[in-house]
Image (cartoon, rainbow, N blue to C red; front, side, top):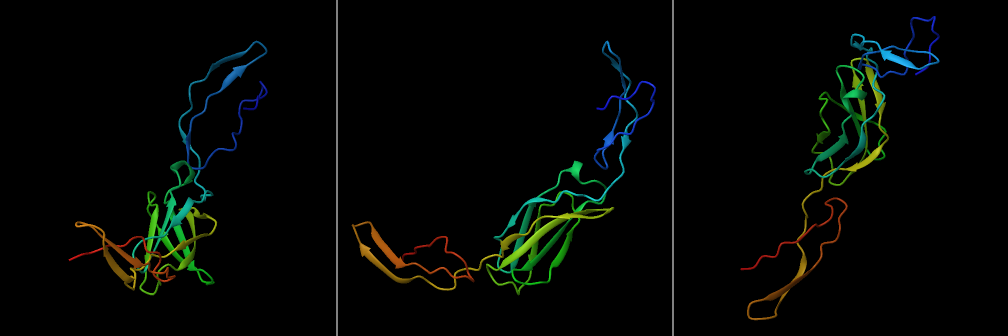
Length: 194
């Protein structure tokens, strides 16, 4: 901290964080050295302010058909800057000009799920997440691209054939299902026999 002239008996402390409790001590010094610190002052809380730190790690995806799952890393308490803290989630289909806005009032929240039957599977959305408290709306994150949930495969594998390779084993083969923009990627197959 800055050294204050010996004839001065007050100082303004700057660059403190909003809505944080502080206590202060004063230490006298001279050319010989530094003395003992005073007893701590009473706790004093700085005034609240609009939050300025946006959530990080905006991601999501997955979920069920007709869902857009959005996740983020919550903002720590010391950066919330006041009471009534929550999140503002904004999203729109890629290429659209109109944002949909949702408010998530829980401080601990790190996920928002938008459900709408009109969402087609694997649709890209532009998403940003911001913060607010009783003092007003704060900063929004940069835009992230998140895809809506996938749908189940709409077609069966073709060309299934079986070849006996031993008395106890059969090799089964098939043509893979092609990737489909609307239903997504095939993560696996199930082979059934009877």
